Amino acid sequence: MTSSGTGTTVVKLGGSVVTDKDRDETLDADSLETAADAVATALGSGDVEDLVIVHGGGSFGHVHASEHGVSTTDGTHDVGAVHAIHGAMKTLDEFVLQRLLERDVPAVPVHPFSVASRDAEGRLDLPTAPVETMLAEGFVPVLHGDVVSHRGEGVTIVSGDELIVELATALEAERVGLCSTVPGVLDDTGDVIERIEDYADVEAVLGTSESTDVTGGMAAKVQALLALESRASIFGLESLPAFFRGEGAGTTIES
Ligand SMILES: Nc1ncnc2c1ncn2[C@@H]1O[C@H](COP(=O)(O)OP(=O)(O)OP(=O)(O)O)[C@@H](O)[C@H]1O
Ligand SMILES: C=C(C)CCOP(=O)(O)O
Image (cartoon, rainbow, N blue to C red; front, top):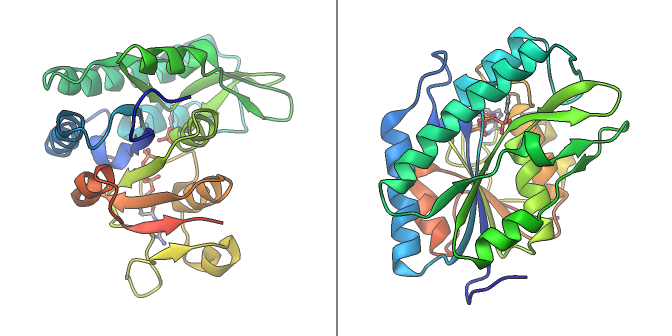
């Protein structure tokens, strides 16, 4: 399913990395530039060939989702809310794409709202043929947390964390990473936990996000990544280059 020697890499740039989560609709310009530099370097050096990027909502998506009372399970039929949340995410996505394109990364947008849906049980269906074709044609697909049509609920939120799991599975990704503002999953003394194999071992130290966040913070990330068949990691921005080089970064999650 891949077209390169290094396999497919799926990485999420957390909303807490690319935005200032404490100020409404504000980018973290420096961090976004640093992340875009790392992507350009990884592609330029050949450390990464097939790359799919997902970014989170940060102070763009979460603020609007929270204002309208929408989460991954509680939906809305209010078309104004749909446009407010999706519109904010498209605005953020434009900023992310722009920074990548400036560095000659062939980044192209994929808006999950247009292609994905949830059934009445909340199960996500994300058709990945467009992403696979984009990769085969040399593009870097960029997806993002978004609203998603949900049977019986109107729309709910789809998190970037759910998207990386779907993509990693469908694309049989070799490297799966989640880049956040923390250097990894931290234990109760603030040290990075090197390896997580069982949710029960770490449940007590996993919290939600400190800022407005409708998709569950660190606990939801660990749960989502444990559901993957392949190994994944959670790390900070300073380790993004190492992750792209295939080196250990932050916390490794493998069930
Ligand atoms: N044990 C833990 N270790 C590390 N971070 C934790 C832990 N428990 C809770 N957190 C919180 O989780 C946050 C990371 O989750 P958050 O959802 O903000 O990340 P993100 O994916 O970068 O953002 P977004 O959801 O907007 O995309 C950290 O900033 C921290 O506040
Ligand atoms: C709140 C919205 C619209 C997206 C949430 O995506 P996440 O930040 O990856 O959890």
